[in-house]
Length: 118
Image 1 (cartoon, rainbow, N blue to C red):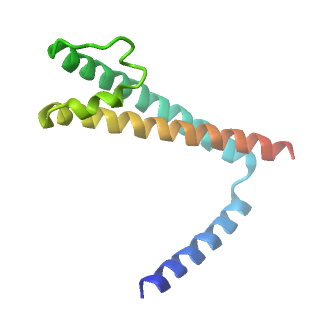
Image 2 (cartoon, helix red, strand yellow):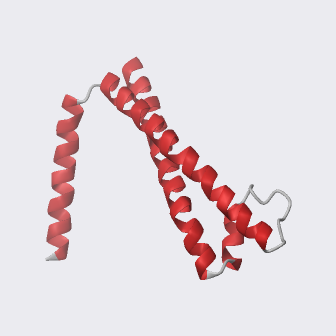
């Protein structure tokens, strides 16, 4: 039963995608991508910045702030206590979501521009 449901969902998704291609013009696709890019940056940059601030405070309180720790900050997650991890998790996830939205929006904007030129 699960396989049939997945097959039906895939067929409906393919049908909707085919229908959306007839409705959404490359110019609209480009504009949607730009809006997603801006929304992702507006949401992701402040939350990502605050994640780094909170992680820095935690590492300084431990008396151990490695040089260039911000280049790959996730390597320091393993040494955090559950309470410290709880403090940074929300900001880490929100920053990552904003980053993903911004990247998807940028790719959509580029795709819209390229398709429009064809």
